[in-house]
Length: 284
Image 1 (cartoon, rainbow, N blue to C red):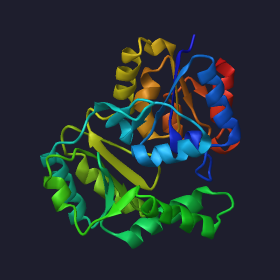
Image 2: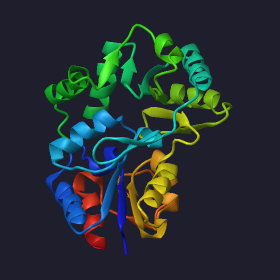
Image 3: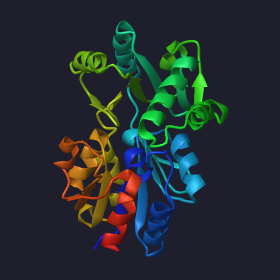
Image 4: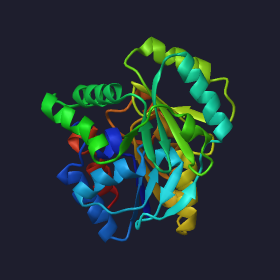
């Protein structure tokens, strides 16, 4: 019997317009009404995840930033696995040498050094995923990250990297140049004690080796007296593999890469055709 369902967001719970469909929201609420613990496990920051979930009327615990931070339904932090400051500085130095655009995720929010680049990246991601490719909607979504305080603009990252009172959770690199991404990833592969993954073909996500969705999910279910055998995990990308591997029932999205699907017992429909709702209703 499934007692906990862990659900990724982008490419999974969210459709190609980056919102939760009515069908997916209804299925999540139905599971919760039947006593199943639903936890959202995402690479997003807590604020960026909660903003979308609030719009869909979903209240749940959140494993955010790939497992670097876990919060209960009230928003209180119950787990944290930050990068060491030395490690973050080492990573930032490599990214700087490659002139790679990246954002820094911290306990105080997400930061960028380049407003225009931040807008362009989010717009490109939004429009490449959206079936309608609505430019106005894309630019609005990109600007909302700044207007609603989900992303902050800074002149440089040095102050954040040195401030011992602000935990550093993740560095995420964005590029639509596949060769450049592969080159950066190759150079990062020699760094010890970090987890390098991705949530899309246009990014590289770098966390502490302990900040993985699977590790965070294991800790979460143990705290709630639930076994992993009683847990279902649903995801679509490489940063979901760690939780797909350990869940008693693992579900990959139909839109996910074949390499990710290999780690799942079940393949559901795509994110734009309510694959999450179908997977949940099947176990209910």
